[in-house]
Amino acid sequence: MERDPSNPKLIKTVRGIGYMLACDVKRCQPSASPAKSA
Image (cartoon, rainbow, N blue to C red; front, side, top):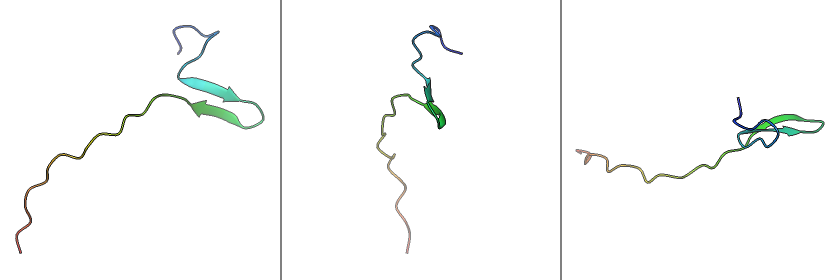
């Protein structure tokens, strides 16, 4: 899956535990929601 398997960037092995998804996550601002009517 990795472009360079000897230097993984997306999926990393955590010894004794398993695998970890290691990628940057950017928080986005929620879009403006329509006004609620009462």
